Length: 140
Ligand code: RTP
Ligand code: MG
Image: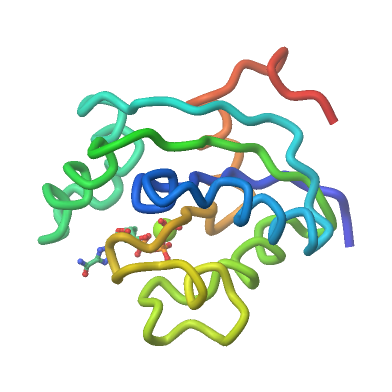
């Protein structure tokens, strides 16, 4: 086990319903430390760039429109094996399939409006963190 970092987004469906604090309490309750955080209105270009890996998927246009439909909170989380630790408390992409007690089971509205994003590998975490944060903005 090692202390590592992951990248998180609290998505517009959650900020709209004033759930930033509730989700942060679940993150901290799982032992993950929020070592950087900012609230942003994504531009279309920023959202398209962030989700470029999904460009060919049928849901890409809708996903980008959703991600710019309101403010997001971007975060860097740090802890023991942070990538799988965060994905475990996020729950499955589709909240209908998410385990009881996970963020998405409790808060998500749909497979698209699913309240949070979390990196799926250490390599992608590093890329995603660098997309939104300068090193000087992250303080463990
Ligand atoms: P994320 O990247 O946001 O952490 O979520 P994930 O790995 O669980 O899901 P992924 O397959 O990477 O999909 C990225 C986001 O696209 C939206 N989505 N919509 N309409 C659909 O069928 C569909 N499938 C995925 C979700 O917002 C998902 O989190
Ligand atoms: Mg993903």
